[in-house]
Length: 86
Image (cartoon, rainbow, N blue to C red):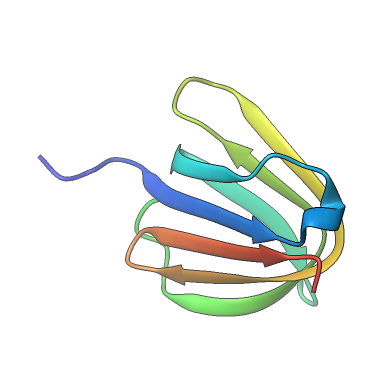
């Protein structure tokens, strides 16, 4: 049976004083120049600049929020890599 979740890794500068996240997620949400968006399982592959907020929803229902000025999100085959504080 295929994996029903996204694999997510969040990387950032140590000055952000936030715990890194690496694990499974049901969805990842943020905002880019076109507006707010959500990444779900089987989302198309893309790379985008993101702004202000990142929200990760885990399979257990936990919501993890990051506040930042700008970052980069890369989505490729259900793997989401986010680089914050650039």
